[in-house]
Image (spheres, rainbow, N blue to C red):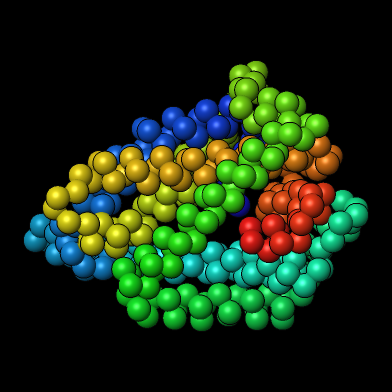
Length: 284
């Protein structure tokens, strides 16, 4: 939802999306299925699963420790970005964003937030504490119960926003950039970026899926579970682009803006629609 659009914009649009889909099929499906299999076979944490499953004398348990380090690093990353989201939620809820704001004013809000480390620490810690409370109830009674509601609401909201974006004046130009590959601009860096985004988006290669795999019963097909996850993940990513790029070309926003793209673009969308304050609060 956040990273896919700006990486797509940075790498030229349509041909990046094409390579991303290829990487999902060639790399995402087998790697995710493998990682789920490690989790279900080991029935432990990422570290202990590799230790329990390795042959005597082999060193696969070392990879388990790299997985643990990867989870810590990724959590640092996600809690910070989620803190930004909570910050914007508060700004929309309290009227910090309002109708009639210029593009420079909206972009300035993101810069001001990044220039306030004390504020970012507070919002990040709020995210960490909330996450700890949810996880303290367990994977199924805590995390699964919360995300079932929140993800369904998010999916419904982004479908509505995607349909709305198709009515923008710049929708045709934005979708052309997003979905029509320009093969004249292909280079090796785009393929690498697509592969990196596939691994990042699916959270594979660092034990996260192994943890979920440890809860999957024998009556479920691991390949089927992988395909379900990848389909829904891609569905959300594609819809995010359908929301973002028509808005960029309509409101003259830079598609290569980087991490601020989601925040600047979505804030612009919400300040231009009726009831945008409440739609923005719900979204963030």
